[in-house]
Amino acid sequence: MAQVKIMARKNGPFRVEAPEGSIELVDADGHKYDLTGKPNFALCRCGGSVNKPFCDGTHSRIGFQAAEAAVRAEEQGKDQQKKP
Ligand code: FES
View 1: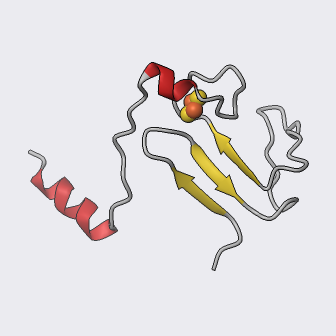
View 2 (view 1 turned 180 degrees about the vertical axis):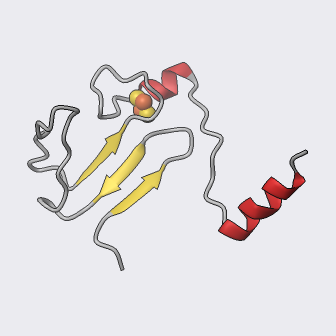
């Protein structure tokens, strides 16, 4: 079983669960975010958080809807064949 789990919450953030110290989260300049004491945290994917890259709950207020779901590769192939 993987040590790190990233779950796309329904109409919400990416929830990251990992043993403390096993993840390094850096910004575009390579500076580390302090994850001390945060074995679990949520990353914003709605774009509305004022505390990016972390979720601050704004997704609920703005009615964020995520359409994606995990699909098997075979199913993706079928979908692509249906497109004109
Ligand atoms: S996903 Fe929660 S604030 Fe963006």
